[in-house]
Image (cartoon, rainbow, N blue to C red):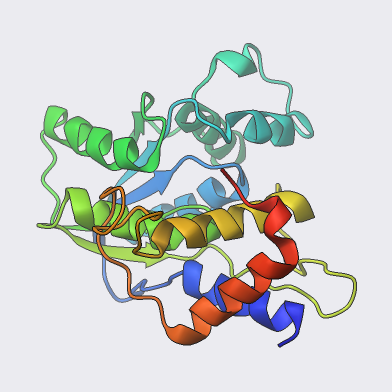
Length: 240
């Protein structure tokens, strides 16, 4: 198995996509992450009529500093370090599309579980009833946020929108995606390995057989084989 083949198998598995373009969702829920462009891509769906409501969930977490450094490349924002990921995403949206007071902001959550739980608290506060939600996250975290959402809100129908599919080139180990704020090589490998560790349902994972933060995720044997191969080759990058 070539490195690029194994990486791309894992990319396809983690970056789950169940979006139904014929459906109008009750809510598009964007989870704060380090890739600034994900918020802009998700907002385009909202503005073109694919959802009734739009929420960004995210306080300050382990990706906030990366997001801030990316934004600083293009924008000069006052008090940028004091803003939550949700506020930063909203700033970018309004800089590009104009002011939108319909955007809901959840500004306190610091992890995936809180993202979902606090989002539902905000919906209750705003007296918004939803039956289906379209989740949008960093593509490598899409599989886990789906399992997290199903764990905390089993009564809701969730779909997933993949903003882009990461693709590793054969030569020189380069991601071919032209996305603003894309991961560095080291962060990409670290995130990919860390997400696989979390979704595999064993004692070290986040599923029912581990920490019980997410619903069970069925991982095919070919994906497990690709993960073991990449871990053997690049395990030094593993997220803690």
